[in-house]
Image 1 (tube, rainbow, N blue to C red):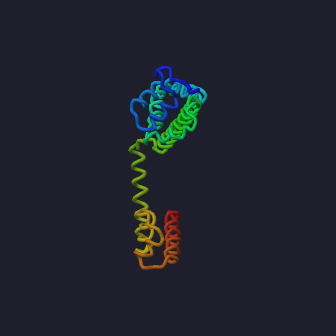
Image 2 (cartoon, rainbow, N blue to C red):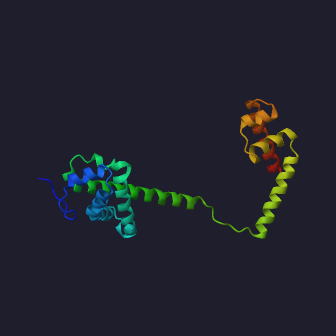
Length: 199
């Protein structure tokens, strides 16, 4: 015997599902009215089981709304998967709990991304006048050491360290082959290091 809905008079669950599948908006509204409370309880139970009920209680209505939007979207494509309308309660609870788990994963991912983004922002360090003077002096000293190098060595060091070019890009600019660029860069660094250590 087909189960009758409590708020729908004489309509059975099977008839309600069939009417929803034909696009009957009144049947869809009736489905929502009949099962919204069951879905809400399923979401609350799942959030409690996940330990998220205290922090995410305000999200329950959003999850339930999303649940019914998904069930009724695309000509009730999701509802069409319900082969036995009599088992709609168990099916709806399962779908609601799975959606709640999806939301929990999304929140967890977002929290990890926010934490990663926050960690990536370097702390603001105020430079004191003394530190600025030391940094400027070091910069000037390095510029003098670079001036002491042959022009090709300066060029290769600048392209690699300042402009961030790769060996192949430096080779293209200078007309050297990649092995020559690597060797020259190695020698240029060695010469610069020797000049710095000399002082």
